[in-house]
Image 1: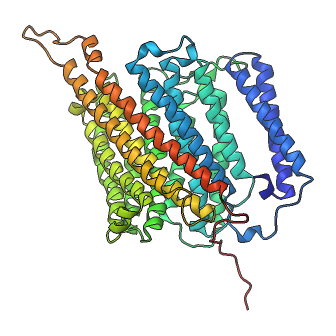
Image 2 (image 1 turned 180 degrees about the horizontal axis):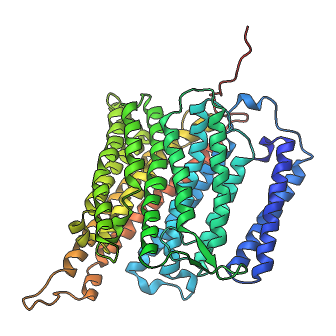
Image 3 (image 1 turned 180 degrees about the vertical axis):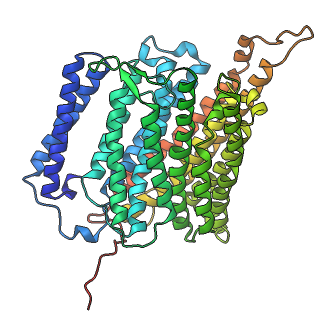
Length: 543
């Protein structure tokens, strides 16, 4: 990592790490105890370790010459490793909390292991740790290849990756200590939110600077999706997390929004986190890696542009469908429902475009497990978006809301769509970045694929059945007009479904562990001096 930086870049990095250490020292000194003090100590330790590493490197040889003639792939390699570390950790916690729903008495007598604290560790770890690192790592790769230019600088990618993961660690350790804003997908406290804004602005500026110096006149559509992901997530994060700290020396804060306005802002954020973090960014991944792996151009480039604008416009209006039958004004609920149904058109345009790209290449899908991951991702994307539009319809929502049907829907998207396209991208990228033709264990990719498929189907189908059963039991009346089932009876009826969910999650986790081991074996076996064979397009002097 450090060897790839020039001496002046190492000096800049040293100043940044000293700044992180000072920030940690200030937080530690101000808070003295509690989550903010622990997080300050983490930042202080990180800054000191990195500073010593950079100080030592100042006396080592400078970065090799001719760097401008090569893409800068070291941040992508690092980001992919972080992706798999977060994937294994967060999915392990997910299997743990799924098991606790079947064996609640297995909860250790320690507050940090309660379901309420572990659950946001799982969601934040999977969405932001696993998914976020995959998006950052692949976006840096795609940006360079589609722009035919090296990244604008070599320090910003490291600040983005390390700073982003510091935020993720602050978030999940804060939850374990009981520090939370109690906002879905936005539980981290105010100082972590401010830190993420600094990191995210750096990410956006790096992306725009690299695009500005591109040698390819056209901006490929994958970059449109990645940019939408970066821009809109920044807007969502800032608006939803505006809060007033109780004290600048503590973690507690209060949001500026209250009542029904807070609910509306939260689900405007929550559903658009799904839209632009878990959809737009990963569509950028799909639109690049699927054609590359299939060795075929996207079926309709024009359709990809049309679906982009449809998704960007329709998605921002649909968050209110999470608040049917609440105090939210009826017309706002109807607006969200209407746009949710309309959203099906651009969503299916993207899914259909991806599947149509494989026409004439189905023999590759049959023989190549990596391409099969991407095909299954496109299928699940189409299914999940249809289900999302369907569940947003008010009468359907009256059956599904507050049930495990919603849990099944979310995991058909995260396991079947998000994780599958990540694995497809990883298996495409790692051999290329390692200078190899294939992964170290090609057969393990097949095993991973079938473990993932089995785990996803068991998980999702069991939750569909659980949710529909719950909804029907809660609205069944006896001859006297009273409820036929007590709430406790509906909970007891969930036992077999919760056991199946745990089994499905464990199978998916096993596949992820196998992927991590395969990637490690591939990277360790990288020949000395190996790297990507493609090169940026450099200006040539006129003859």
